[in-house]
Length: 136
Image (cartoon, rainbow, N blue to C red; front, side, top):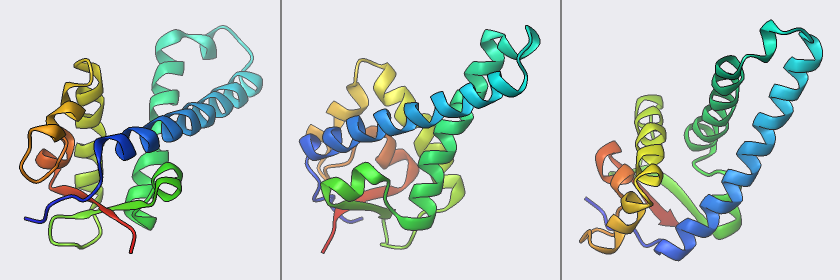
């Protein structure tokens, strides 16, 4: 297994950048759906939550699997790969997405885990078989 050369600070900088972009995308998608289906049924909280979550999911998974970077990762100069250096799979991206929500939801403990991991991996990287590497 390779060791990640991306610091926690760099990771968090990219995460903040990406969260702002992902929520902006979700806001636009939900807004368009509310305009198209401007009735009470389309405005239920659970429906809009899942539409927003799906939008955010597609932002991250598409970026990770097609270009190995989100816009935040690109701005902060790193990419994602499998532990062997190959591009990540959709299964790994799904698992990483779910586990990164858990990492964040647990008061950021999954990210802090990186400081104690010998390979410099966050919780969601370790258990999804992914690694963050600086761009060369």
